[in-house]
Length: 282
Image 1 (tube, one colour):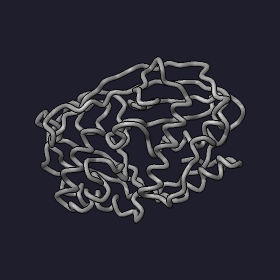
Image 2 (cartoon, helix red, strand yellow; image 1 turned 30 degrees about the vertical axis):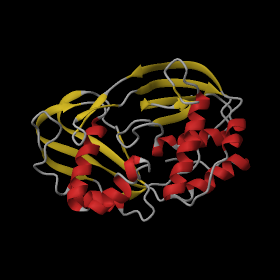
Image 3 (cartoon, helix red, strand yellow; image 1 turned 45 degrees about the vertical axis):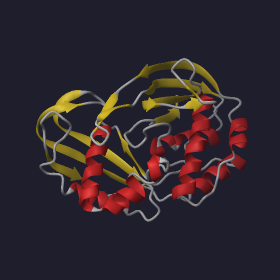
Image 4 (tube, one colour; image 1 turned 60 degrees about the vertical axis):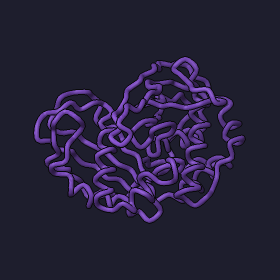
């Protein structure tokens, strides 16, 4: 994801130790339909539903281990579907990207085989059917630190991000860069415990590392898209905060931490594509 080097210091060393435990793989391609259909910005959520059915028909154990693991959904899945289709439109195809981190790296291969069963499957509820899921060869995803200087950074919430602070859901008015740091620490610790090497980030260390952060610009808004659950037969809210912030005082280690949000996402409904974060120098 980056050509930079890991930041130094205790926080940077912690982060590099955690990230070393993940095996990241990436699958990209296009979903082709038999007719133009309504493709929304979170087409990743619809594709996630289709992928679950296809994977279950191919290898149910893969669903139970990685796609929908744990009793009652308490274990985070080992993948995200990134919403790389940015415009709601009527179209006969759309692009996709999937990132996985199951320890053996086998989930991508299972998805490739499952997607071979896609022709003829319905897409959404508009009457369109899949003619083909065209894929690039799967790749291994490298992740290193960013190239940070002392200037401000731009943080983009690319898809709806839903986080809590002290059990209270945040909105566009209350959301702060520190909430993003705390949420990313929780996310990486949970994933490291389930799929990585078990190394942990110290929340107090990262809070102290982030004390100098100030939001000098906020252009955030609340959105409330929904998806239709074919298993629950009811709408599921994908509400959250989107937009951008410009922040000053972001230490290189904190920049690297937030950079991992490009890969893992954070918050609610990450598998469907929510909680995708991007950060770069202004």
